[in-house]
Every structure is written in C-alpha cells, then in structure tokens.
Image 1 (cartoon, chains in turn green, cyan):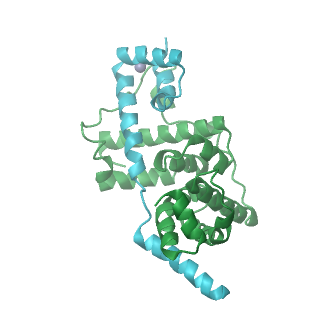
Image 2 (image 1 turned 120 degrees about the horizontal axis):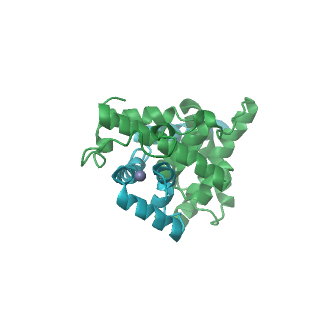
Image 3 (image 1 turned 45 degrees about the horizontal axis):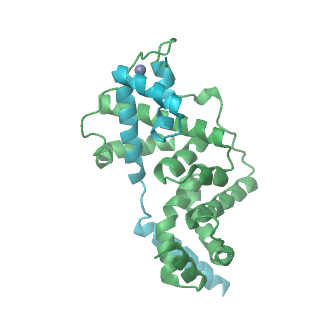
Length: 199
Length: 78
Ligand SMILES: [Zn+2]
C-alpha cells in the first residue's frame, strides 16, 4: 500500500490499515525515543503516541514522510514526559566521551593499534552470530543518550540526516559529531570481538 | 598528506559521500598507500551495511501490545 493510500485508510478509521502502520513504524518510533528514555518507558511513549496519531492523522500533510512525522510525534511525547520528570539531558559533546579510536594512534597520527583483520565473511554473517548481536546491543545500550539516538535513527533506521536534525532538534554539525563518535565506539567494540571472541 | 588518524576521522564521511572532490582524492591516495587504513574503511563500510538489519520490523508481540493498549483506551473513552 502506498503512503497516501495508507494515510487515507487510517483517516477513514480502517483498523487493518492502522495495524499495518503500527507494525511497520513502531520500530522507527522506538528508535527515535530510544535515547530519551529507558526501554520500558519508550514502549509506553510509543503506545501513547499512536493514540495521538488517531486524532492527528487528519492534520497530516505530506510535506514530511509518514515515518518522519510519526517519529516527531513520539519524540515530542517523550520530551513532554522528560519535562514532567524535570530531567535535563545534557548534550554529549564534551571530551569525556571522546572516541575510543583516539588512543589507537601515535601523537603523530599514525596507527599504534591498527584494526584487526576481520574474517573474510565475518561481517556478512555478523549478525547471524547471536553472541555478537547481543554484544552490539549491549554496547549500543551503553552509548550516551544522544549518541544512541543518532545511531539508531541514522544507521539502524537509515533516516535522512535532515529529518533526524528536525526530529531531535540538532544542528547538522552536532549530529555529525555524535554519529561519528557512536560509530567509532561500535567499530572498536566489533574489532575487539573479532580479535578476542569476547564482548 | 593525511595522517592515519585523519583518515579514520573522515572515513564515515567518505562512505556517505560527503567529502569534496579534493578531500576524496586525498583519501584515495592515502588508502592506496596504507593497508591499515584500507582495512579500517573496508570493515567500517561492511559494519554500517550490516547494522540496519538489527531492528527491522516490530515483533508480533510488540504490535499486539500496542494494539491492545489502543483498544483498551478506546473502550474506556466510550
Ligand atoms: Zn593510514
């Protein structure tokens, strides 16, 4: 079903269309709020967001994609809860969480600890290995909230950079820094796994 | 001449084709000469291609949870 047809069906109160949308877009919405709240709250936030969608779908304009629009609703819902619990999330752009790749170079910028050669087919089967998948999930969960949000939206959900900036209200350059650090962390983790077989 | 650290710091921009032609060329030259950086870029690219498959669609139980929540809410408000 095309996006326009799906939206029309949802507006008409078609329950099957609504189920389809929930099935299709819930992961993106969960990813969008991942960095803003803990997993249990995230599910709750997304459920509340869908209730909002029922009312708001009539006002949906096709300027944004449905996915981006739904994610914005979820992020707004999560932000409202944050405000209620008065928890401020500081932007994670300081050096305290600098890239773990930094220590792998000499002061002159040459490799001190070069990357391990990953086995030939390791990466294609990367996520077929349960232990590695679990290890990745653990490390992603341990990222700072900002890093986790951008990694989830960009690299897992593959959303356009512009949309992510809008949803998370980040400047383009801040998004870049966060994404870059998150990727370095994930690379270093997989590299360690490939070398030692341990998480 | 780029250092290896600089190459690693620009690797994801290279993969996402966000570098100017001049920067791209500088990267290419370094990569031709440096096997460690070549390995880094190759493996990072493979990793970034693999990650999207981590969370594809909501599981049936997630969808069921959400639908039940919505239905119970609707019957409450009726
Ligand atoms: Zn190099």
